[in-house]
Amino acid sequence: GEREPLADVTTTDKEIKVIIEMPGVAKENIKINAYDNSVEVKSEDPQRKYHRVIDIPPEADTETVRSTYKIE
Image (cartoon, rainbow, N blue to C red; front, side, top):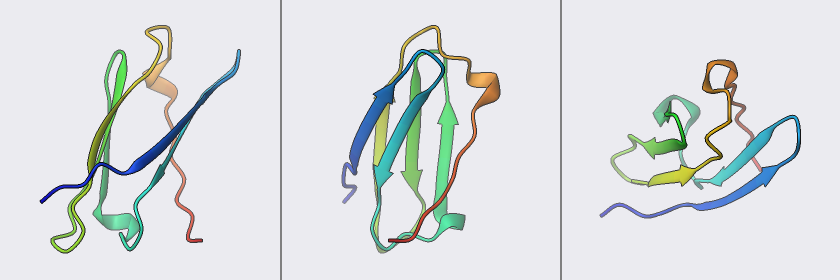
């Protein structure tokens, strides 16, 4: 089944940073969708299925969204 990954949301006056932990999932298997007041993150890896919707403040500018991927 799907798991809900750990998420950490940090808000400053200039940005909203969402950090998601999805161990063992390759970058190409991660899909991100930004909506008016939420961000949906899911994996399309058949072995490691993750899905989570994170609420963000409504004033967030979803037109300037960017993502990074780190292996730790």
